[in-house]
Image 1 (cartoon, rainbow, N blue to C red):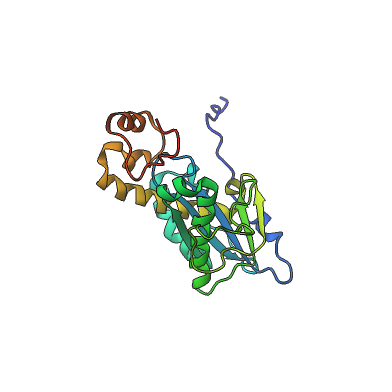
Image 2: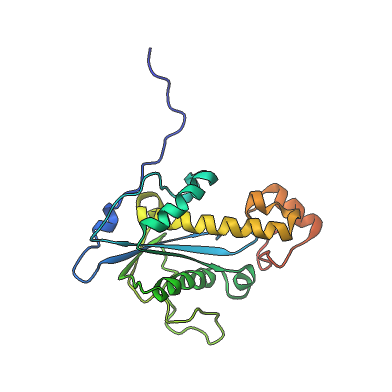
Length: 230
């Protein structure tokens, strides 16, 4: 008897093949970077960074893009990712900051907060591998004096973007796990303050129940009120 057809195709495990290609004289430390929360109605946008040493690459079992992992698996893997990486950090930009400066600038702010934490710990990545097709991490040429900014110059390393890097590149997948776990924990904390909206389950995203709660109770300071959230 023929084996039953598989109803779901499992995503291939991310590798370090792309990262390995960046190893050249002067390039040793690579920072995988990914964001979560860009499309939510409430809560922060969060950026994770996982730094690896290109001279000492080793795989980490079970890590995938955070969207492909169950919450319990993400929680289990998060401390393993931190142990695996040379350095790691997560930065956040609040809903109020998103409203004030826009989502792309907020991504840069969150990313550079994480970057500053990495550098403050004595690790300076030589190069960045960023999920997507747009470099939102590097500082603008002439930032406004009114922009919120972390201490320090921000990420001045060369940034390479790659669409679906979180699916294929282990460093970026690891960063996505860090960011997702940190943001989910923050949303559970905020749920305790604003239990009407179900953030412990929807994590601030636009579920029907979340939108219904918004229509009934209105927005909170944790909602991105500059967006069309109703």
